[in-house]
Length: 164
Image (cartoon, rainbow, N blue to C red; front, side, top):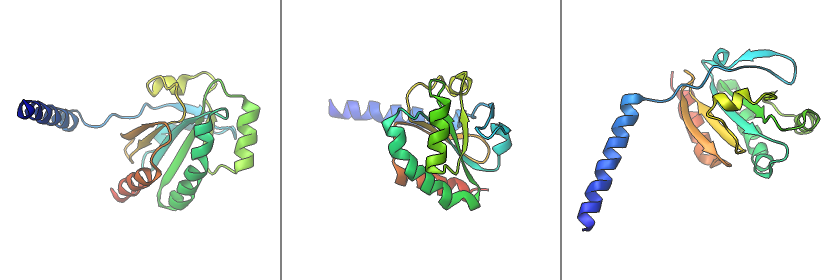
């Protein structure tokens, strides 16, 4: 009985691994947005960089908890080609976003997804924090719902930066 389940589990793992290699990684949507500084940017313009797209809200305690670590990671890897796109959710108050950005001196590209269009294009993100790590080609390496394991995130960033 146990061998049967072990065999089924092994087969399932092989099928999933094969599907991953056959279908590959998913490409991040090409979204365009205006930063809180008024700059127009398209996500596709960030190709060549490893990018963390981080959906957050000032009312989200998990977001506030992860932010200092994301700041440290950004500062550590900026010169190596790493960027964070910080996407404040549509329901967030613009004044709160700006106050928090200034208070924390966020070293990120910050945008307010007023219409919810960016969240929608990333699979209808509703839970915060939610983050997507993208490789230099705009492929999604990993999605995190909730606070990421920062050691794992940093290792994935280092690995992605090392690839040409």
